[in-house]
Structure formats: structure tokens, C-alpha cells
Length: 183
Image 1 (cartoon, rainbow, N blue to C red):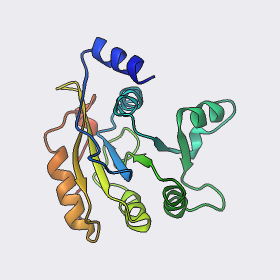
Image 2 (image 1 turned 90 degrees about the horizontal axis):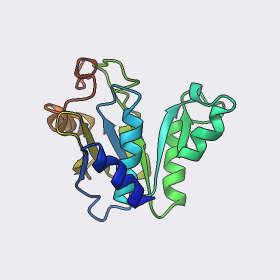
Image 3 (image 1 turned 30 degrees about the vertical axis):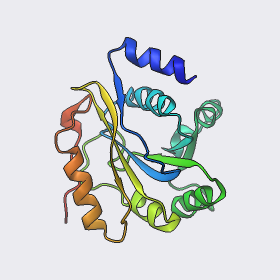
């Protein structure tokens, strides 16, 4: 599967850069997320990296028969799932697995958001895992791991590091991407 994913991306002119540096568990941020096709490149990129990953998707995508496809692809439903809090659910998943990366697009669903969902930060804190910052840059045709943030004690410090990584990254629809802004 890894070889096939590599051939598909290379054929389309894309590259994958960086690695997890030995990190076996993380909350992995995947951005900018400005088009549905981002999933395709992300799935191929993470497969090429050879990491065990699951990604979070809004629960509205889990309707019959799509729910079977979403789970097969490695998706976990979140937001308003009865009896579940995504932060605790993700922390529990990470605790039970020796090697797992949970992929999150905190800026939201392919629309411009200046207030990112802070759930990724609280998941990393609760699970005591680092935040891995990945980019999907359409201008460079590159999916890359750009930063690993181990200190998750202060949201403002973390988001400042994340914003610095994403400031020059171009999504498929750049006008739909915004960095997290305070207040």
C-alpha cells in the first residue's frame, strides 16, 4: 500500500517531506484544509510515511452506507456523538495503543475560520502526547511534517508556533484558510 501511495503522489507531482522523529503517539494537525480533495493527499501522504493513523471527521458523514466507508478509511466520528466526549475518547484511544497518530484539522471544515477549535490542544494535553504540525502546500505540491511541539502547557505559545508554520502555506483554495486569531 505504501508503494502504491508513493506512485500515485509522485505521478501527480507531489512529494512527502519530514518524519515523526521517533514519536509514536501524537495529535497531528493537518492544514490547510480548504477542499475535499485534501483528504486524498493526506491519506496518501500518511500512508507513505508508514504511520498508524486515524482521523477525526464530523459525525454527519457517518450515515448509511457512508459510515462503513468512513470507518474503513480510518475515520472516527466526533461532535455531538451521544455519550462521548472527543477529548476523552481520543485520549483513551492513544492510551490503549502503543503507536497511533490522531489527525485533526482544527481550523474547521474547508471554510475560512479565524477561531480554530482548541480540541486538538486539549486532546494532546489529556493524552500527554506531542502535537505534530503537518502542512499540505498546493503551491509546492508537498505534504510535510514541519514541527513537533512537545510542550503543550500554554495554548498561546502552541498556537503561536503553529501560526508561524502555516503563515506561508498555500491550500487548494487559499482564500478559505486563515490562521488562528486571538480574541
